[in-house]
Image (cartoon, rainbow, N blue to C red):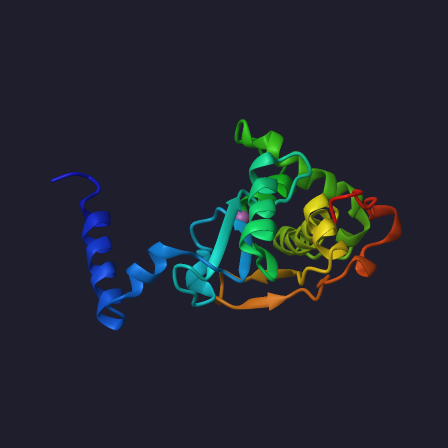
Length: 215
Ligand code: CO
């Protein structure tokens, strides 16, 4: 008996269930993956990417971090984005935030948790930059939820500004970026209507010069 017994038991039951529905499922999957979507979401255990959009293994390429951020210098996230665009050729990148996000709440409440406070400085920057948007908020909960939405919009814009996304558009690759928000209160996903699918959607000062010989 190990402390992980529950996980192993669940795993074998899950694998059996999948094989019951499609005996060749894992054989097919082990040969290749061809997901159409890259999901950038929060690490929060209540926001499991595949489950909430009903996708099977192989259908969603996933990157998760605290407060679903796309930071210009985060090699981890940038590598996922590059591989997804250049190798997997995903057609959609979804940044999905969620209401009541712990990272966003920490900023609104001005609480400290350790090293992660440094990561959350990016959220703090957004909070100060959009100060006026919070004047009409009735309480802290509303401030958190508004900041969760603004954060998604900002992260989609950050994604727009990456060389990988702009190079893909400049060479005519089909690629759309979307900003969604999930409610852990009712399980419903909402589109924040910040879809970008061409270099023309990017404000001129944020466009990167085309790399000669590459695109
Ligand atoms: Co969160």
